[in-house]
Length: 155
Picture 1 (cartoon, one colour):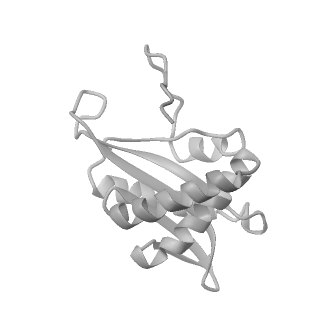
Picture 2 (cartoon, rainbow, N blue to C red):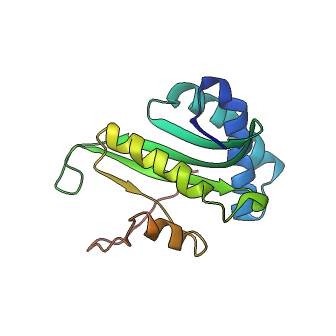
């Protein structure tokens, strides 16, 4: 099993993995959603790979069997993110045949190591019920805050 960071040459693989993740997570995508997402991902990955976006792959026989993404953002520091840099884990995906072999742990640990090297103050994620035990094992804790998460959907 080979664990490695994605490179600019992996954009097609990254797009495939993101689309497959979204289809599994949402139960499908419309043709219009898929086309719009693919178009945005080409631009996003070209601009951000190994800058404000890192992906790690677990490969077997040159095929990706597990992956996780880290999106990095920078904002004015506060006591919760003293370096001003934080990360968000996205797209944790291991194909069914390769689950329960520690691959997600390996790709996540590689991303956590990268985050430490880059000086991130913290990493956030949204855990599914299936993923929560893994994230807890890696040291993630539920966020307790006096603030209520809110969102204004613009598109």
